[in-house]
Image 1 (cartoon, rainbow, N blue to C red):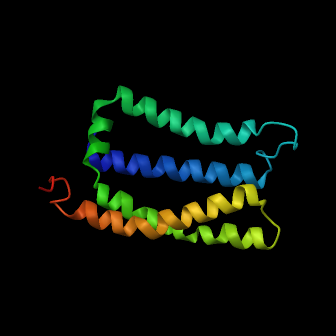
Image 2 (cartoon, rainbow, N blue to C red):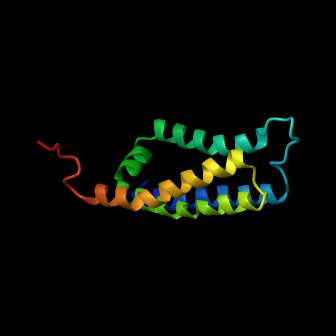
Image 3 (cartoon, helix red, strand yellow):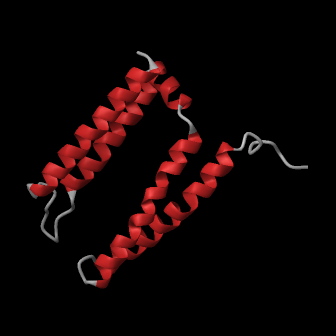
Length: 132
């Protein structure tokens, strides 16, 4: 399979996972009682990660595709996470609990704000050279 085909397949899989997650959330499949562990949500998070890890471990062409991706671009894409301020707004209106909203919001803002700086550093071909 070529890199272009892996890119299309990966994009489709991410889109299908997003649609599944959105639909499952709308149908309250992830809802659990407060005294119950969030097993459905955990599975929705861990299964795609597990599939990715196994796929990368057993498929040399997929690993080559992953290694061909531009780290600068992958890092810059994280800039959207600056939208983590939404967690803080939801906390301010007592919609989200502080135990989740504060670290998630501030963490996302920190990653989103610094991602472009790291991406620029990765884009510099001299970033791996040791300084003397």
